[in-house]
Image (cartoon, rainbow, N blue to C red):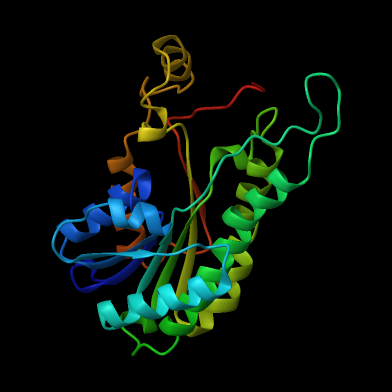
Length: 253
């Protein structure tokens, strides 16, 4: 795909990894519609050529309206990069052994998995109508999974389950959408230095920095954004789940 001409939807695009992806794409000349919760979209900012659209991925009507708005703003749709997600802790039992509520688990699944799939199905419907490019390509879907898909930590069963599901559905989706000329990939970041970690105590940051084999640091969101460009450009990349983690392996806690 020619990134300089691409029309891309990025979810979770008001901050963190999604914002870094949106900005990197814009720097390459792509047109970008960044979807995020309405309050985040209203408070966020993108360079010229980028559009922020309010969207609650757990609300079907909101997703349909946001993707339709993105198509109008961009004049079509060539790629989707799904970065929206939450990492709410979901322990089975409380500290005193009490049964924990089901709602937090259900909420994480609704955002990270069902919401991702809902955005994907609307975007794929738009891409399927594109004129085919080189090799018959009509679109690319890149979903953000996590190394927690493989090494989920204590208290994060819902997060690990959703990220594992994203990894697991990559090949079936690639097989289903391949005849339409649409590629599907999943990226599994390690520990990324996002605003979410900015207020973390220095001792904890040092402990996290010790986990990667090389380089001995947290990943920069810009590095993930750079790899997104590679995924868009290299057409033989399809059906793959790629770790971007400096050989990090998460401990149980």
